[in-house]
Length: 354
Image (cartoon, rainbow, N blue to C red; front, side, top):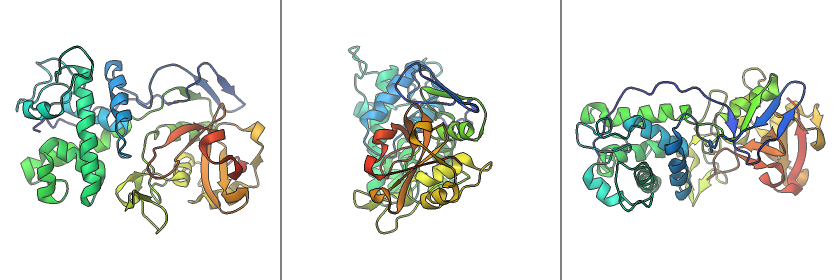
């Protein structure tokens, strides 16, 4: 598919909110408060409402772990800046609509997703669902290909230049291909994803280390889990150790840019509080400040150990109102879950306050 490759998107301000699904609860203490609103963000921000609902539907329909709403949002912004008029959303090569489909490609992926009786690349619903369907297929091809690099980068290259070009080069085509169009397209989208990542319903206000940590972690909701990946500087590829990091029999961590549970905590508190890297070490560094379950505040760390007393295998950040923000496991994304179901209740060890 031939598309525009424009300049990098303008920075979109982040409104730090996280999806909790319960409306109107206020959490307050001496240094942090959290007020839920109903902005319908669903893990996105800076996205026009008429696009948001279709992006979330497209994401929900795809079972590939590398698919996240911010990927589709950043791609749409790069393709058309969310424009829908024929004058603004027709490329020099003839690609059409907000997702920039060439007619031949649209014939394969286009459907009447919005139910108006016509499958059109100019209809937002039809275009976004087709984009999601095509990207989902490309992510699966990328996962099965064995080619090195970020699966999302491979899929984006396939969307822009065709999967045949990815096969030809054994990865993302180099800068020498098409004057760098595909190479730049991939880099711009991956670098602008974070501008659309965002939380959905819980708005964290107030000051203090805990509130700041929740706010910072919330900007990464939707980021994939990568065993061994991530750190103070942000997400990165991980590794497999013979037991962890595998998905469907393949090493997923080495090709996934993301966080694991403890690197997310380290990232959230850094540099104000420089916690160690692993969940077990983080417990050791903070266990002298235990917190009872009925006195939890946003930013507290919660730990799980095998059998409730064995090796500590998981850590999460308390997000308020009985919920935690965490990186669950390989194949999942950073998310908000109830404390009671985030991990096996019998493995809950306790909480600490960094």
